Image (cartoon, rainbow, N blue to C red; front, side, top):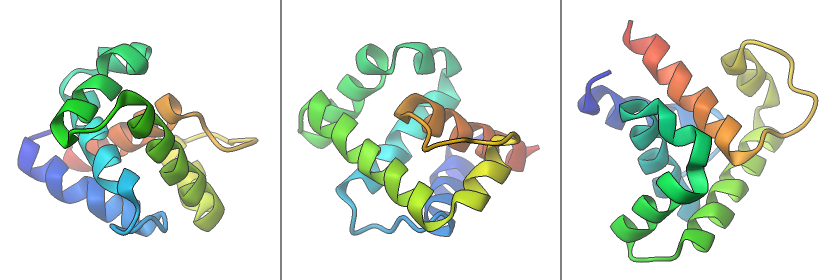
Length: 114
């Protein structure tokens, strides 16, 4: 996926999931998904390899990034769980954890680019 496509696809996907730009975590999630697309291995250690980089970019803390992405994940799950399940490609019994949510979004964006 090219960075330009990701920059356009990720916000559109979040909006389809019911997450809008008024959530602080919206921008954090976009950035985190872009980092995940560029290096999928980061998803294994998001607290060490994603949250700090996003926090530096936005001048905040890793804890704030984690909390706000968790809010975005919960909002997506509440507003459009059927789309989230469809993007995941398998049933989800409950709201996914942040790393799983980011992986679902990154996977969906990569699939759209093919």
